[in-house]
Image (cartoon, rainbow, N blue to C red; front, side, top):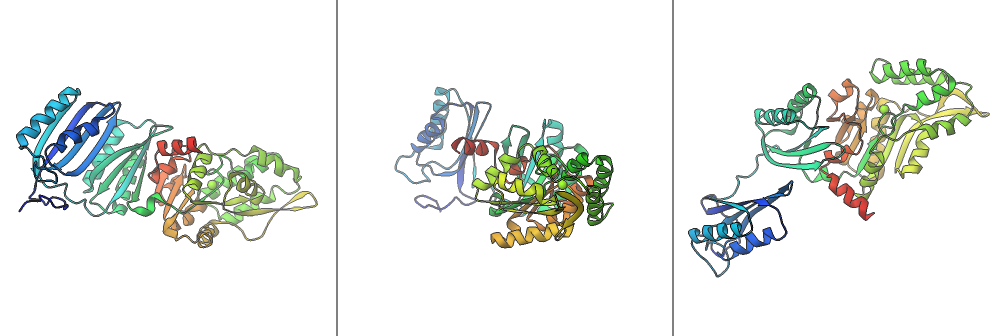
Length: 411
Ligand SMILES: [Mg+2]
C-alpha cells in the first residue's frame, strides 16, 4: 500500500526522509529548501526551524519521492543530490536521513518546565535535564522565553505526571538555587482569566504597616511582629491587631505620605499591562490596608481589590481596623469570590504571594506562585519564583519576553 494521492499522515511503515539543513541564516532559505523538495512530489509531514545566534537549523520531514501529491517525481538519489547541490549553492550543510513514519506520539503526562536563571548556568541546566530524564520524562522541545532580565528556557516534557515532576524538580531547584516551575500542559495555561496578587512584598516592595510604623516611631516593634506572622509563627489576626494598635494617635495625613512612599515591585506594571491585554482580570487581596490598595487599584486599573481598613476618627488613626479582617482564609475566600464575580472557574486563576497568609489562596488557585517567598511558602506552593521581577510570572504562562515587548511597541 502506498500513500500516493492521499492526504493522510504516513503510517509507521511508510518511508520518510528527514532533510536537515544547518548554517548561516538569511532570508529565503525555507522557501528555497521546500521549492527544491517540491520537484520530487513529496508532502511535508513535519517542519521545524530554530535560529540560534544567526545560525539556522531547519528540519523537514517529508514523504519519500513520488509518494506525495504532485506530478513531478524523481528517485531518492536524485533528491539527495539536488538538495545537497542547492545547500552548497547557499553555503549550508545538508543531511538527509531515510527512515520510517513520523515521531511517535508524545507520551501522556505533559508539562511545561520553565527554568529561570540569572545567569542560567550549564551546570544547573544539566542537573534539571538529568532529573527530568531520571523521573522517566522525555524532553520533546526546548525554547527560550526570555533573555532579559533573566534567562528563561522552557522544556516541553512528556511521560511523567505533572505532580511527580514538580516534586522531583522542586528538590533539585532548592538544592541548586534556581527557579523551576512545572505547569501542566494544556490550553488553559496560556489564557488565565483572573490573576490575584498579594500586595505587601509581592505587588509592592514594602510592608505597608512598616511604613506607617516608621511615622509612629515603632518600626522595630512592628517589623518583629510582621516577620513572625509571615513565618506562620503567629496568628495573623492577633498580630494585625497588635501592630495596628501601635499606630494609635497617628495623624491621618500620614496616609497620603505612606501612599507616596510605596514602591512597585520591578515588572509589576509590565505584568498587569500584559495580563490586561490578554483579556485577563487582575485583582489584589491584602492583609494591609484599603487606604493604600484603593490607590493602587485606581492607579493600576485593577479589577478587584480587598484589604483591611484602618479606622480613622476625627483625623487620627484609632489603632483599630474596621470591617471583616483579611487574613489567610479570607484571602482564599476572596479569590473564590473574585472568580465568581468574573465568571471564571478556579482552574483558570493564578494567585501570587509571598507570605504564610497567602498559602490557602495559592493552593486554591489553578496556579499558585510563591514570589520571593519565605521557605515555608515556597515549599507549599505549586511553583516559586525567587528572582525579584514580577513579570517573570508571564514566562510561567509561556508568554515570551519578545511577545511582551512587541505588544508594548504596538500599544
Ligand atoms: Mg505579602
